[in-house]
Image 1 (cartoon, helix red, strand yellow):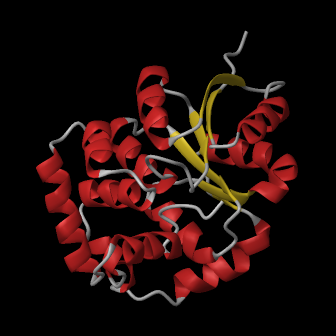
Image 2 (cartoon, helix red, strand yellow; image 1 turned 120 degrees about the horizontal axis):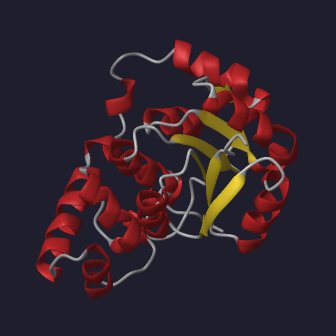
Length: 217
């Protein structure tokens, strides 16, 4: 009997996870459901799924950062972003992070199985809803565009600290989550604010919202 492909689902809404499981259960083996980016990192390393379906906006560690880390750890795993964000800029970020597929939650019922089939064949999938705009944005992108945003000058650790601070975590809480000292978190926060030219935690949070690092939901 042919082994069914394994799928790990990551979204911070339980109802979404349950809905996706129902859509996929007939053809795939669902090996796990996780609700934040840090749980995703842990589960993915343990389960080594064929495909990870993940949202961009997730607490503790967003999907883009999780994908960047997991791409290095699990080079055989395929990543499909399933999100509410219809802006082609998010699709560009997703593929930069190592995605093989990008589609919108509103069309998941019609497209998700198709997207999984495509990425398992080493193909790429972009939802038709944004495909034209996405291709135009890629065509018009200069080689220097990815580094034009200040957030791209931050280190992976700094982006982790940025998300946790923007989510309202205290220095102590962020240090505990990242398993580093309070002073190290304070140092990173200070450097982040210098790099992004912001002066208060409120401005930092506003910036993180604008960049999709955290969700306004």
